[in-house]
Length: 137
Ligand SMILES: [Zn+2]
Image (cartoon, rainbow, N blue to C red; front, side, top):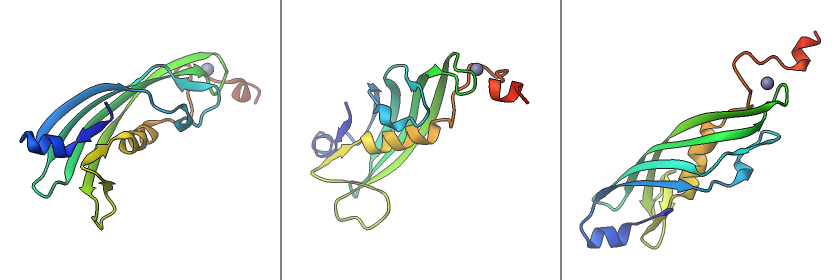
């Protein structure tokens, strides 16, 4: 579930809620060679619909990266997490916040942004890993 149906929630007078789901994030978000997501990104969100129909979304994303250590190319796997703190305004808004149209919020942009902020610049097999490039010196 990647959308929040603001119009429907308003008609039911449900102005807040929690969402927990797995998100199949695009692998293109990762900019590290030989590394990919180890599974769906675990998303946990709380949202509040405000009186002007703007929507506050807060929560966390958590994911596992697996692949080759960026230093020694051994198999590596590590967990990461990041924060979601997004503010959506309905169409016509003039701010730099996320916008939504048609009464529905598409969460993928704000999730991708949160994941990218949490992504490391490299994956290493362990704290003590010293790759060959260091050993040779
Ligand atoms: Zn390593």
